[in-house]
Length: 485
Image (cartoon, rainbow, N blue to C red):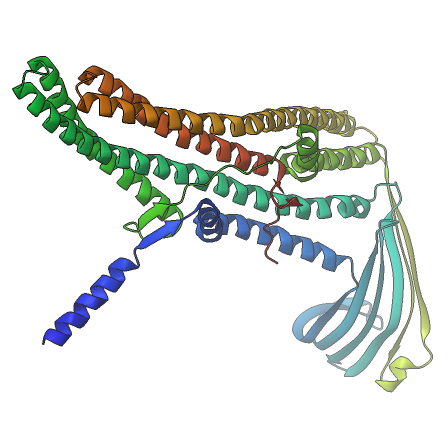
């Protein structure tokens, strides 16, 4: 029985031990980009765009299809003319029909047309006063068709479809970098909460010690009753501060754990990062990376290209439309199957279709003018996006480069505040400083600790924001890509 209880306690202890996790910033970002629902959503969106691109790529290759009517049976009444009696009569007709054919098509991107070819065999059996069987064959037929008014949709698709895939790739990376930036924010929110909790614990312990010292000094009339009351109030406030710090730390830990796909009750301990030494980013270089990688640039470029395509189509269609369809081949009809492939006859077709608008009350012209205005709107939007994005990049670079100095200054301020508090505490113990001076020194020390972590938070948030804007890793000196093909 004791052994069973021991094993049960061991299992419970092991399970509880697994709930404690130590995270640094890099691991936090990796977990966020691998496990969050948002990352999976971005990946699914990219996969849809990729499959659409592969589908378009497939349309550029020869397409083969089998078209068949295996069996068709009809019984119906048909009208016939009897020449001997000079009258029309209705007669019952029965028919059995079967057909199969293979067709192939190949688009021609340079010209915007399509080559096609086919082979076909048909069987017809009629029942009535006279039964008859026939075979119809088209051993081969080839042709070509296209619009002749210089609008080539295939040429535009060749420009737009790869751009769509590249945009999907950049949107995926941009979305995941957004997740990284949010993970960094939650990481430092917990870091601040953890440090506030530590400070609250240290502050309460310090208040207990100081109050005990103050009580002894009050007994010998070294301090006044008012000073003792102030220290007692500080001790009471310290308990409240500790309770609030525990709540804030628990909330921040649970939010980070859930965001990283962990159990809500996971005990997370953070390793606070330092700055990246000697990393200075050039603004012009960062702007160039943004032009190459930022999906807003690509999206506006795609919008301009699509607007120009629509404008060209509207310009062509506002005048007239001409299309060509020509084919040559062989065919034959015979009562016997083998004869259907003998003594083949020519089968030729040439069609030119012409459509000229006579009076459409300005429909096509206005459609063309609207398309031109859309091009101008898209081009201005592209310029506006470029301006705003480049400004954001430049400001973020300047902020990041300055943040490193701010972190160093905050670290120096923390050292000074710690020394000042330690010296004031010693002076208070020796009755050389009053409670007010000690409280001020302690407040400065706590503020310096928070400022030091806040400066690191702002430093890393600026870095990850710049990564998101430019999709470039300045530590590894490479373009960021999260494509999982």
